[in-house]
Image 1 (cartoon, rainbow, N blue to C red):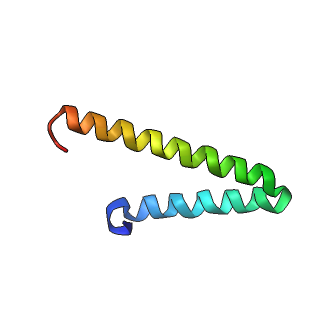
Image 2 (cartoon, one colour):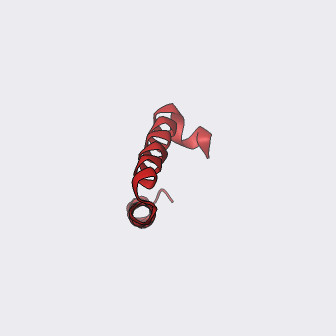
Length: 59
């Protein structure tokens, strides 16, 4: 997976996890909610990208 996202995507994941960790340091319930929202958003984006690629005949 790391070879597909590239170095910039890897840095983005590290920054994202650091941000959730910082929020979890203050309040873990809010951090869990933000993590769930980000996971759901990721699934929606993956679905949209797959749909667009399929409509162009690329997937």
